[in-house]
Image 1 (cartoon, rainbow, N blue to C red):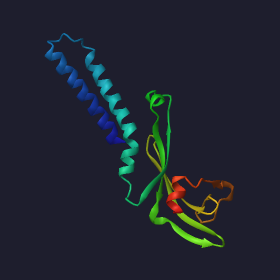
Image 2 (image 1 turned 180 degrees about the horizontal axis):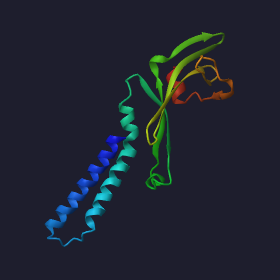
Image 3 (image 1 turned 30 degrees about the vertical axis):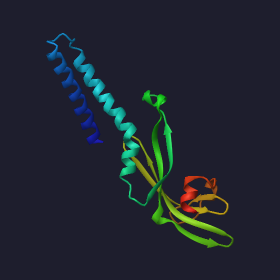
Image 4 (image 1 turned 90 degrees about the horizontal axis):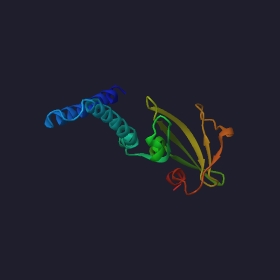
Amino acid sequence: MLWTLLAIVVAGLGAAGIALLLRKLTRNKLPRWIVPLFGGLGMLGYQVFYEYSWFEHQQARQPAESVVVATEAGHVFWRPWSYFVPMVTAFTVLDSKSVVREQVADAQVAEFMLYRFEKQHIDHVSHRAHLLNCTTGELLPLDEKKQPQLAQLKRIDKDDALYRQVCR
């Protein structure tokens, strides 16, 4: 977060410097208010760039065995540009090395880890083990003791990215 704030300040100072140069080149014919205007637009421009490139930056930092299986895009009222082009605010990653498949009775069951990344003022990462019945498409999260949480049972489609990665 410190580096982001520093980058925003540097972008504002750089844009204000361009406005000062434009004023000097026009022999001060441009109004004085153009300098803080350029500074503010530079800071706002970097902030918008940072927010829209967050997902690609986080995705590039993941290990090769991780696979993005879901993304969430949305908008926030204090970011009016997100109403026109929604930005990715969260995504879920499957650790493909953690997938363990077993045959239980008539069903193939897979256990794996899912990581969820959320864009907040400080990035938030959570992880949880899951069970997926590849025969019925039932997805169950596991608690810390590896016990299934039956109240949180969810069905997923066979064309879902998570199903395709885990049950291929």
